[in-house]
Image (cartoon, rainbow, N blue to C red; front, side):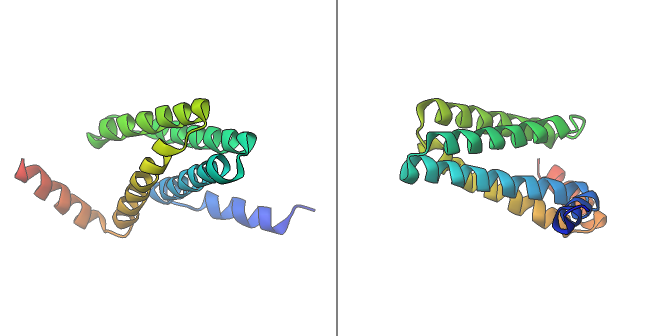
Length: 136
């Protein structure tokens, strides 16, 4: 018999909206970066840091792969995700968490922005986009 908790988690992910999946991925990236920082700075656990940084890189790769490049902001997000991946690689090679600590808040800001978007109606989103485009 399958583990009930695993079945629950699988079902909850399958019923998420795309924006909810993105929010969850941001949260997981933040978590993996925090694990890496702790493993590097406090635990001196190179394997744990490596595993966490690789997981974060894979999640960022998933976000990059899911971008709809016909949407203008996708190009900016792709550059950010690429930058985050590069910093994760550098941190993993050098076992230095300095740059990772700088980008964790950026990931949090993106998560918060997507959370706000997920709470808006389609009409509010379109009005916001129209207002932003008229400011340019």
